[in-house]
Each structure stands twice: as C-alpha cells, then as structure tokens.
Length: 559
Image (cartoon, rainbow, N blue to C red; front, side):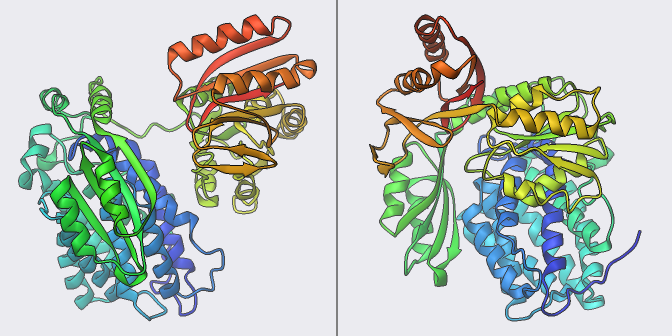
C-alpha cells in the first residue's frame, strides 16, 4: 500500500483532519460490534454510538480551511470533543483529544513524539477524571498504549512508526482486559471502550499510510484465540437486568472561573460513577454522573455556572433495552457486504419507523444515515455513507434544509456519480423515493424525484422548549405549535389541536395527507389521532404512519 509523508507540514492541518475523519469512519464501520461488547457499566448508553456521536461533533467543527496550523486545529478539536462528549465513553475519549492539544502546544506540526505525549496526557487525565478508576477498561488501554508509545518514540520519532506500535499494542491491551476486570470475563467479552479506541487507531493509521478503506471491519481481539460470538453470556444479561440504575445525567458548565476538582468531589458526594473534566482556563467543565434524581445534579451544576449540552437518560430503560438486544441468537457478527446494485440511494433520517419505511420504499437499494434536526451529519459523514453504498451511481436525499448544503459538497468529493435531490424534509424525501424506479437510468430518476419535491407541502408539530416570540406568535415553553413550509400556522396547548388546525387550513388543496407519529406519542394518543382526523376529514385521504422521530409529535406531508 502507498504511504503518505509521516509529518504534517508546518502551516497545514490537512493530514491531521484526515486522520480525525478516518477515526470517525472506522468507529462507524465497527459501531454495532463495539455496542455488542458493551457491559460496563451496562446501562450507560451503547459505547460505540456514544463514541461515534462524540467524534461526529468533532468532525462537524473541523475547519474547512486546511491551511490552519495543527496546534490551532488541535485546540479547537479538544474543545469540541469536551462539549460534544456523549456518555461515559465519550467523556473518556475527550481526554485523548485534550492530550493531543496539550502535546502539540505551540508547535505547528505533529510528530511521533507529540503523539506519544498525547496518549500519556490522555491516560493521566482520564485516571484523574474518575474518583475510582477501574482497570480492564479504556483507562488501561490508554495507559498501556502510552507506555509503548513513549518507547517507540525513542526508537523512531516518525509518526507512522509510533502509530504502528501503538495500534498493535491497543489490540493486545484489549485482549488482556478480561484478565483485569472479572465482569468482562463473566460476560465473555473484552472492554468495548478499549476496543473502540483500538478501532480509532486502526483508522488513523490507515489514513496516514494512504490505505483504503480507512473504515474497515476490525476483528475483536478475544483472549485464548476465541471468536466473539456477537452476544453477551445469557446468565450475565439476566443478572444485570435486575439492578436498578437511575438516570445518566450529562451536562456542561461554563463560567469565568471553575475549580474542576471541587466539582468532581461534589458530584462524587451526591451521585454514582461521576466523571468530571474540563479546561479551567477556558471556564468549561463536562459532568457525567448517575443519579436517582437528575434534578439534584443539575441544581448542583448550576451553582457553579451556566449549564448547556444537557442530556438525561433513564438507565433502567436502557438496561432493559440492552438486555433485550443481547438476548439474540448469538450468531457471530461479521461484515456483510451489501449486494451491488445499479443505482444506490442514501437517505438521511431519524426515527426507527421512518428508517424502516425508507428502506422498504427503496426496493432494496436504500441505506439510511442517522441525522436530522439537532443532529446534522457532516460532509464527511455523508461522503462516507455514499462511499459505502454498493454502487458507483448514488442518489443522495438530505431530507433536511440544514443538511442540504453539506450534501451539495459530496458530488465534488466522490469519484462516484452522485446526484443530490434537494429534499428539505424527510416527508419530501419519502415522496421523492416513491418516484424512484429500478427500471429508470440515473438521469431519469433524478428528474422524476426532483420534480415531485416541489409538489409536497411539509408540516411539523412540536412542543416549545422555551418561551419565544416568532412572527407575531407568543409561544410559551411546553405549548404545541404547528409549522407548514416553515411558517407557523397554529399554536395551542395540545399537539392534536394544532395538527387539526393545520389540516383545516390546507384541506382544500390536499388530496392525500400522510402523518408520521413521533416517538413521544403513546399508542393511545396515536389511536385518538387516527379516529379524530378520520371523523373530521371524511373527504380527504389521511394516512397515519408510525415514524418514531424525535423532537416532533407529528410530521405531515400534504400532496
């Protein structure tokens, strides 16, 4: 395989950003396997997903100008990683990028010595961020990789040489984790976070060498030459489901002055499994803690400064989902290549119902990239999805007006023939997908799908997250409001009320109205919606479909 230069030239960060993007692609390719390994702590969110979302937040903040120096970019990366960190694994992962920024310091190029120093800093920071560090986890992999990195840098400070040694050690270190942590041996797995870090290093190394694909499937390094079966031992799953876990609470604190150690000790007093780290000089701290009452953690946090990036997850529900997902067939996880097709379709969407609908509508040629409002995929994410599609001809459906600009960059970056259909919402995306035909060529499909987009009106119903005045409407927090083609058309206390008002306004021009119900609605609410609308609008064909989308109680397509 060809090798690229092993030093990032002074005054440019392009190779550094390429390596960061490669780690993201590598975790994306192995996310399901990393998730399947996750047992410690069981209900703290799936490790692979948390690591991927943390990496995506970094990629989204990468500069478009490749002439910036490595030290400037590394500082930006460290901040993005800290603020964007998801869950336990994401916050520990942020230590690596913090170490990278500190190791590069004021230098403008990245060397093997910098890389070795970055892992040592990451290891020390990660151990300090936890009041009770546990061996056999991602922390151990950091520490053992730091030892090897320092030795390798003495022998040869070239970046590729140090990275090769560290990537190999990461795999070996992960293989040893069950020897250090009995819960892993009991579940018959290795540490998921450590394996995720090893996957990242594999992607970074392949990018540095110029090898493709950078996001390949990495075999899980199980001890004694065993193969990972793809599931956790059944007895372990049964025992874990009986434990009560409370809430995983994550938030950022920003203030002019912060004492990270005081905040860390405070969270250790009021909660479990606290991880607190940050940059006192910049006035940023990121908190992760398990609580029976998440409000107590937020109240404690707000006493130190302004809160942001708040995430609260019910770990008892996560534990139940985790157990259900791992009571599968136990069949071995393998990389299953997609069947080549003449034309592939890549669509952006969020919501299990919408995902299933898009895949089924796409007649076997469609893949879904998770994203949408509050979770816009980057150009790199879209490009990776296009490159992974099983065809040299790809139709890309951004399905969100905020994703469209990034999607339009993809054709110029891919060697494939990529056509972007300007779908401004998932509703218009599904309408466009209904026009797709495997019997048409790429040009004709593009024409047919683009034409229908302008014929679909799209509406949304959601609840306000704060008090706001928009276009003369005073909307209080918790109130429902409806928008149609981005204009507010109704405000009220109940989502069904504003949905009805929206349909009334557009009933005269509608032949078919499709309503996609969100994840927050109960089955009883969905049944009430269906009965109410079918009674009130007898002369319009109304179809209510489960979408499962976050944020919106209803998504509406009017045709």
